[in-house]
Image (cartoon, rainbow, N blue to C red; front, side, top):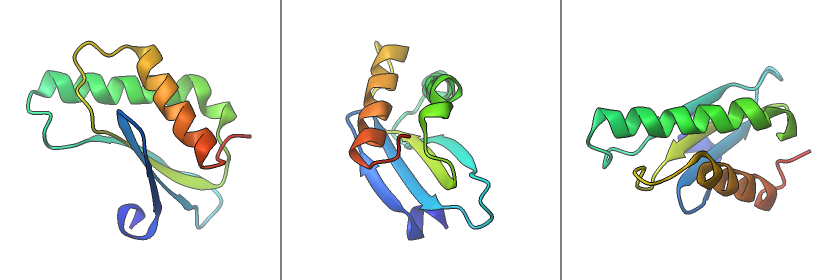
Length: 97
């Protein structure tokens, strides 16, 4: 599995799990940690993650499976916060092209 066998890198708000894809077609997943109790918070966190991926996916290295996990508090966070955290992690791990 991606969480068990992949590499993990974390930022302030997001954990990133990644693994080279078996077939060359990279799958992407979005999830949250259990401590986000309210459904509205979990949904907003996943929506932010999906939006960052949708806009920035051309910057990400192809051929990997990615799992983005929101781990921080979601209230008061904006798209810019999520984007900055994800791009920082991707750059740190050398996953940008």
